[in-house]
Length: 260
Ligand code: SF4
Ligand code: SF4
Image 1 (tube, helix red, strand yellow):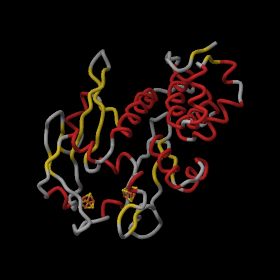
Image 2: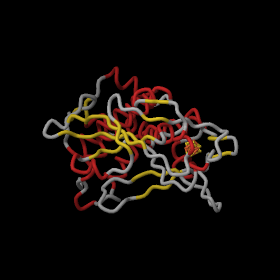
Image 3: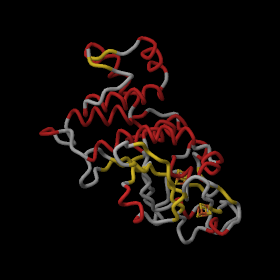
Image 4: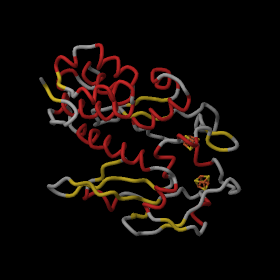
């Protein structure tokens, strides 16, 4: 989920949606465009997407990050983005695309789930309270936009089972938007602290080992009941990781972890 600056909102392409605004759309395998939208994409994966996909594939986080994604640092950013890898064929089809549809449909990433609506958070003035906003922007070839099934942002999200992804993406965007500034100093975005922050967002296997086998728990206070949860629950561990990143990179106080 992107953070959108108020002054940039009119420049974002697509039809802007808020509250009860409606759009019409329906995707069906019978449409001539079926699968065309799963090609040649810059498909950004959020930490929760990676967690879901690697569980669906029943592989380790290391294997998923090695075999299924490209990690890129965009100019002017201080935290890398993770993109789902496309295949090498001439169409550059998504590696999960199959003639009968998406091979990971139940666990598809947030962006695919809500396509062709892109959800964003708009931050208002001093309060920094985010408002959920959406942009309906199907590509020209998408036949689904000519169907007459009507949706709002909420009913579309419910239909696509996007609530949990939305909640986790919102939490992640609160972390990610901090990285519009450089917290790494002389170490740079390839340094040790930056690598630890990446691990705490995208690699729950390695982060769990780090939490329980490094000196982290000697340096930070974490409640015993939370420790129990993060030992076995990857989502709790990820939320804990977000708090830890905010604290160690930015000094933002967090409820899940405090310095000793
Ligand atoms: S292009 Fe649109 S209608 Fe066609 S398969 Fe993709 S989402 Fe569905
Ligand atoms: S993950 Fe599935 S829905 Fe998303 S681009 Fe790939 S094949 Fe399409």
